[in-house]
Length: 459
Ligand code: PLP
Image (cartoon, rainbow, N blue to C red):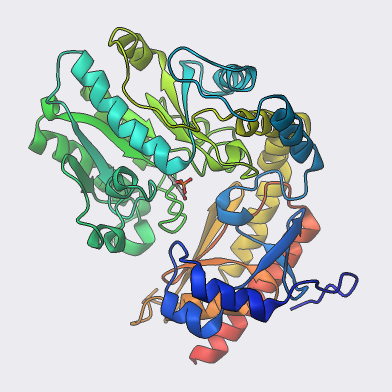
């Protein structure tokens, strides 16, 4: 890893790692492994680069957790937070109160979202947004006099967050195994994962088949029991699974036959990831509800929300109190930072640049990695990409022990100064949207080196 010799580290890594082992229970972490290896302590960041407690410089190919869209080190966002904290550090929006930052942010989001979405409910995260989705869809149908229309259909291997409702809506088996999930009233259909599940047919035919699972499930349950269908435009945490081109048009046809809400989870796609403001713009979807978070503030402060269509809002407006809310719904400092973040995305033409320049460049260079002997498929859209690691490039056969190749490759990336994530044997990138062409070249070179080293280690 490259050492940044201009700034010798002021941190005592061994001490931090020991305190971390002793006291810090991490999310999504194997603590036995953490105890043996110690954690990586990230101490600062600038642009697309992280620095760790030992002074190593690392290209962040994941934008944190898919969120630092405008890149690190934006002093203007820190300044906005500081000024807002001096002016009004906290107030809530329960019981008919409000404050300017949340009001201005709501207006801005209404301007940016698809034309039929003009309201937002603020939350603190993507998971909270999906808890809100669960309650709001059921409240909607109950207000319309159909309280039994309360089942939400989701997809296997979807990710919708980590709270009880979020993890239940998600389709991750290891999450369901812990805590008796999913909760009642949520079911899952097949995912549109052609490489993983559909190679015995063409991507187009498989896309139609996966979509038709929705029709079959609605018929099985009865239209009068189904409240909503929830989906990510492309599955992010599941492995950057981009549905075949036939999938979304077929889903739209099916939804048009039934009176069911469409919830498009934009927590990753929202705010430019595909080169459009929302994945719904990219895939031409008309959601009734749209959970958002992450890129909304580029992760600088925690904030999320649910964008609400006029159709839903007209009904819930008649339903009296929606008995739901979070202490930090529309937090003033987070809202002010989110608004300033959206202005940066607009004023610097960041999303347009992803669409027209850096996104196509990343995709061209990423596709070159598809030639590597360890890679069965390279796919991507806008500013995300995935590589499927395979044992046999001719047949696309996977390794027997799924996750070893992925974990090896991820570790080689990190040793060589790149954060790339592994979901089993699928390697994933989602860099800050501001990444430049030369930084993309560096990312590709480092990814290729890690693939070479992984290949050598496995053969
Ligand atoms: N929905 C999607 C599509 C996500 O990818 C995530 C997080 O990765 C979430 C919801 C949950 O968001 P959070 O971690 O902010 O609760």
